[in-house]
Image (cartoon, rainbow, N blue to C red; front, side):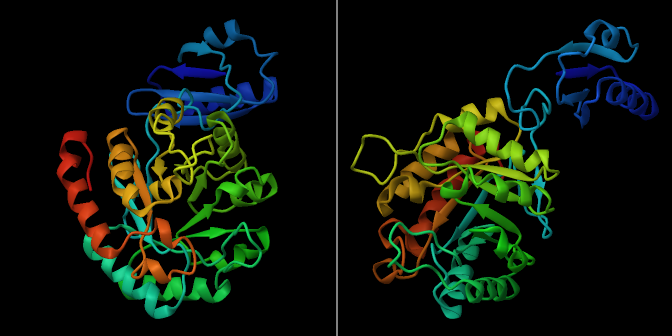
Length: 337
């Protein structure tokens, strides 16, 4: 249930929240927008007396929300959520954020070389995998804790914020200096991990599972937000379909759908969506044109020798060409890059 309030004093708003919370045993979430304040009622609202609330002088309207996701719902939070990192980088709200780097951190020299290159081309955030979920147990699984250390050193060397994927709750202490924690597609419904991340104060990039619906993605985000962390970034990375010519099928329609249904930033991963290096640029351009708030792209200095996902990794030169073309279309989309 949502309650739209008229312009009113803070003490009156708080008094109403306390009244509703105590009388109906529900949690009340306050969202301050540019033109209005909205109260979101979380819990069993079946006993809430709408007419009684509507009679309050500061209440403009009361509506029941049918969707099972509440905190992620744009009805609760009409304005776009903007996540600001420590260095001032903004994700969402008309900013185009580009995250770039190798699928796997392979060495200190490799990650620093790529970091310097992608930063020069305009990337805002350095991505790199330290823990790698692989289909085969015999494939390279990442450098683990050492890979995190290499990423942190690259951050100190270049000043770029870093994002890396977490695999289990036991790894959380290692992510203290990581700016954004990524939850991969395979862990999208690892609800115990999501609950734990909900108790942190770090931005969480949540990837859509390869066989999950948009509503399921939003419900997974709800797990994080319901536990206290509202810094969630949604990521469309392609879904599994009958098509075999690409690794996955990029669901471009998910971008405007998510933007309409939710206030959270939406990022697209064209690398995992295609699995083919030359497809990364056209898919990235399409994602931005569809309204994506950001991109997360795999860049490797020598894809042919990459220890993981070399086929979908683009070179620093290709990445520089992509960002150059993005800069040409950004003005038409009313975004900043």
